[in-house]
Amino acid sequence: MTDATWISVDEARDAGRVGEQVELRGWVRTRRDSKGGFSFIELNDGSCFGNVQIIADQSLPNYEADILTLSVGSSIVASGELKASQGKGQSTELAASSLRVLGDAPADYPLQKKRHSFEKLREWAHLRPRTNSFGAVTRLRNRLAYSVHQFFQEKGFYYVNTPIITASDCEGAGQMFRVTTLPIEKIAGSGGKVDYSRDFFGKSSYLTVSGQLEAEIYATSLGRCYTFGPTFRAENSNTTRHLSEFWMIEPEAAFFDLQDNMRLAEEFIKALLTDVLQDCQEDMAFFDQRIQPGIIESLESVRDTPFKHLTYTEAVEILEACGESFEFPVSWGADLQAEHERFLTEKHFAGPVILYNYPKSIKPFYMRCNDDGKTVAAMDVLVPGVGEIVGGSQREERLDVLLERMKELGLSEEEYWWYVDLRKFGSVPHSGFGLGFERVVQWTTGMTNIRDCIPFPRTPGSAEF
Ligand code: 4AD
Ligand code: MG
Image 1: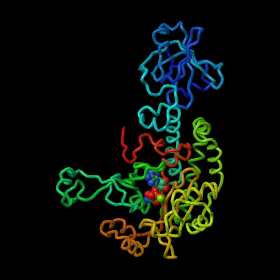
Image 2: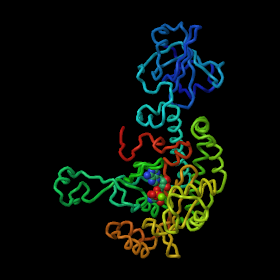
Image 3: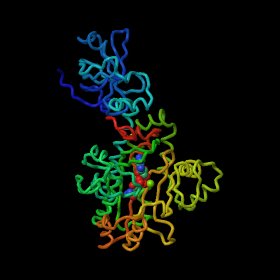
Image 4: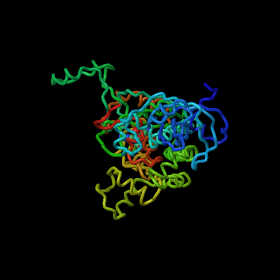
């Protein structure tokens, strides 16, 4: 063996390394044999979007046995000298002095050169990260996750892990997955009532729909915190924007009012865009060329333009007057549908919009009641292409108002005793929001379906892998 150093394809594409003896390890994307007695192999190892070309000469001892039979998808180790490339679109290439096959990929390897639809690739979630598109989405998602932590850490927010199993339905929408160890086969046959006091946790428990209520505990102790974890919703919506398991970032800050909350959300979203536009240029160029033409320019414009703010009431007035024919009617008091939100952000304002002060009848119990008696201090951020990306609010910090609201909604004070306690002991105004992580990935990559923005999507009827 030579004393070649193992480096990534990303490192090998750096012209500054020309002349070094290096070793590359990865998967074969293509092979082309030249009549002149050598082969070109495109190698990718996931470290970046692009490949490195390896030139394997017939003088290699295993040229006929291994290289002329080398198939797409095989894993190899190649070493040799890194040279300046003559070919266009690449700065370096490897002149192989040795090439070893680690794992062959027979002819039934599904990802042959022909393009596959994203629907088809979802059936091969174990192989799709080897494609250009999913490699790029995965790297972008990774950069966004890193940015989330960078942004909040720099602002003095503490990262708090909230429970995945919980007994409370934060959003009150009743879309919870039950967690149980009770023998449901037996119970189903008995036709009787289920005694959940005999269940594992001694009460009904579920997968969480949001870490907010627990985040409030930490915000009203440490001042500022954020969660970043998986959340689960058993809603039967087969749309391109819903998952049953999705990741959410939920900052929560004491002494923040709704205005502070909206400012934080805007600054946060812009920081995420700044980072991916700056650090994922090769992947972004691919999304711009192949997935959604114009995406870079559109994200740059969002990054550089102040978000539009308007109240729910103003939004309803615009929608009622716009003359557009919607599937769902618009009227004050009704929840806005995706089509309404998209009209506002895509057509009317052609940019991000923050809607605030929603009717209290369509919002959860914890939102702060406004003086008008009809609305709550809620806010949603809507962006073109995706619609709602953030939902948040100022929380009700007044004990009497909270208890009154819970009574109205039939929530039991005993069950939420600890949440109520926060209002009894040193209550403070506080606010927070939730950003749907996959929706950000969907927005910034331009991918059409949110199922292609998470490695292993869970949706109604589908939990493979
Ligand atoms: O608006 P939501 O339901 O708000 C909450 O859960 C609050 N507790 C957040 C808070 O104030 N701390 O959800 C927040 C965001 C939505 O704006 C959306 O981006 C995303 O989570 N989201 C989903 N993403 C994918 N699939 C689903 N089924 C989603 N439901 C919500
Ligand atoms: Mg919402």
